[in-house]
Image: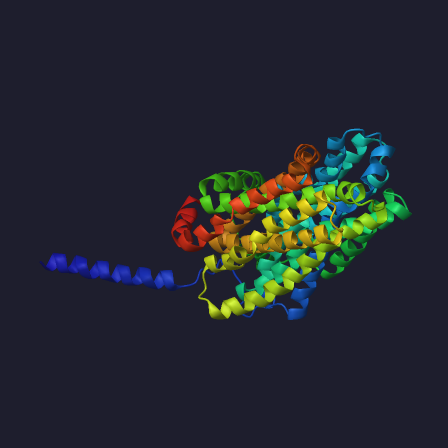
Length: 485
């Protein structure tokens, strides 16, 4: 009995000692110097945070102007470069978007190793160089290769910008920042052809690319002066390296360090989104919905010239003005979203499904806008009416795309959000590349009325998705989390 009691006492003593040892902090791990560490990007001054958000939003705007800025002058491009096929001329516009889908798949892993800021700068140099190449192209092959490579680099601000915003903002601050940042992919394709129409008519289509290179170079230089590294893993690894150098203690390691090599990170970034896409019903449905809406927007961007010049006799310069309908609705949607988001945070309990409320309310405007646009263009009703239809479509598109991004970030958390958004972006830009290729054939077979109505019905078919996720999403989220790799 005594022996048993002795063993019991020893075990208790050992257990107590083990608890005490576990409670001691690991002095070999390098972490932030408390909650108020000024080197932590979340503790930066407000003006410094907003300087980064604004410069990123402008870079995203410029790189998203590039897909459609040449759209009003596509007939001149086709004539100069001997392009005779309408499919090839449409692909000459949308091939840039395919680059946006593919390039970030390789840029994102590099940012995990070397930090976000060096990748931003390198990508901007590549973007400007190949935009200049597009301006100097003499053959269709040159033009399309340069378009694709410039798109690969141009997708970097969109791929890394969400991560940078997450690095420097809290959850409460994030909605306003993401709304401003989301204006790049939404307003860029609208503002681009508006400017491009006047440039193509006045200076020739090559000047659309010269202007893009000037803007990219100017704001890329501003980014070089303003931006600092925000990735917490990279910052702490640099801090640990500096402490090892100063102290000579080679056991010091960053708390966020991981042993993955660049090859392993690349494999994870390329494979994980695809697997996650097909394992998660939430991600699959939401991504398909966003991809359809984005693809339809690009189909409209690439066919506005033929519709308004062919149906209404507008000139190359004035045809760019028809994009203002979409642009005005997207800007208005951003302000409305910010007001609604602030009120919803107060009025509703915190839940990822609450992000879907604006989508449920306003997503039907996508289908309604397509019906109005298609049939009024078909019957040649005054040009202001089809433009009003594009306003409705753009309004609905904003409230599909922005809430979807925030919802996916909330559902998959910090560990899975990058993969979820990567899968979402891949589908979105793939649809934006290839769906517009069907535009000329579809309108030829179904006319503008039934062609756009078909797209509208497909968009409305996705409407039950957000409703079901709002009601049953809390059940599906557990499965989505379990399915993450």
